[in-house]
Length: 97
Length: 200
Image: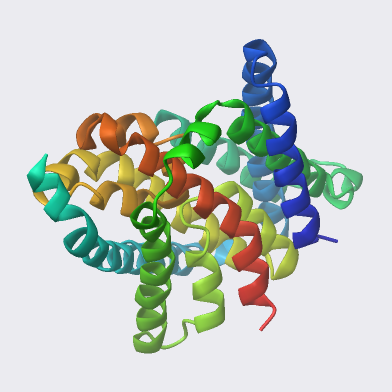
């Protein structure tokens, strides 16, 4: 079963290993390639899971619509909140430069 | 942009193969995706630590820099909560969990698959890929005509790696550190916030 603590420990452990290996550019590059491979495997398996159960496919238009709406709401909300940060803490200094 | 299309293609092939039921049962049952996810998050960590950027980012960190990812989290949740309140049939908990991917589709969709189910995982996958694609296509316009932080805000977790080149090209190099910091904070928050939201 998935465990959020495991994931956080793995990311932090990875950062530690990465810092230790940061001089070895070759190793970091290989890690990058393998990570992309892992994304491919994950997405393929995710597709496999969804395809074999069928209810995602039968609801595909609803899934797409919900995804689009949530994505737009998330981005518009982010833009609104970040614009406040921009106006108060960034814009002035930008003008001085 | 090209890579997110390739990834959608790989996903589509998976759907077709799954639908055709040609894969042996053990492949589906073996929790392979869980181990691939563990490998991925570990390697994402290695990338953050080994990229040399992390140390530089944490040397230049300031309070106003920290406000950028914070505003993305708050804004995303407000926007999505508002939507879920208006559109009937859209669960607020489910919608917030999808929004909490911040564009990091692989991690968020697999976490949601394991904790909730495949339909919401599909929503999370498409929704967060969409966020990445919109970032790629709007970064030039938003940086010029809205404000410099706009593409960083829209990009969410992706500004650490995939959308970093295009975003900094239009915001200027002086925003590169904010991009990386924003992406790192949001990337780390995905495995924390998605399970937390779904636990309610």
